[in-house]
Length: 252
Image 1 (tube, helix red, strand yellow):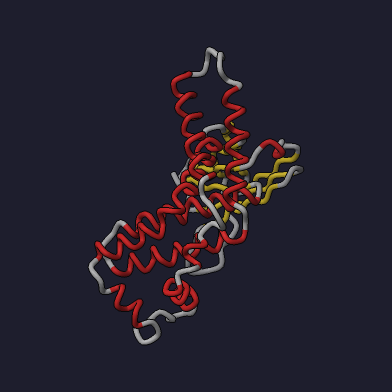
Image 2 (cartoon, helix red, strand yellow):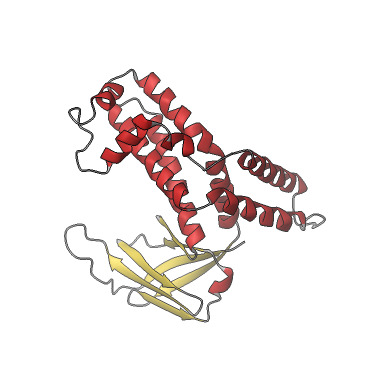
């Protein structure tokens, strides 16, 4: 089954994007092909654009501190495994400490690299990084893959505490979900008074593996899910079948 996730707050929306981008740059840089390393560098620039617009470090540290206090209140609960609890709290403390020692504006070392910024300024132009546009970048792409990978790892390494913070916040959020079995009659589900104020993330899995995708609209008053037939060649059409799916409301 395919898992669909829908953020209910802007903060979670940003974290989901960063998670996906960090995963992509890690997977792409681990390969040997120059195209994969081009993708890795493009993705690194996307991460830089996101962290430049928000104070991601402070947001993550505050979120982790709140979660740490919540977890500490669970000591003495007979239903909680204290060894796992201790490990989780220790991980939070380590990740927070690593972010606290990150000085200056996040990613500033990348902005100060004129060679990288020259590539960034051209990479969003369609076909803007051909060899005749950026000969030095063409040279880099033809270097030994091991050297390219070492470069990418060096540029990515200072951002890894942010990746770790994003990862643990989303992991803790996803681990605290309330699952319900739902039915979309004629491909539509509408709920009012569904208690969205406590939820930060929705997860949907279509049980029957029906070829459709969910369009989700949610606020504190109502939840609307309309399933659309998958069609990569024409305009998507509403699905008018009965769709069985699971809905998970994830909260802190």
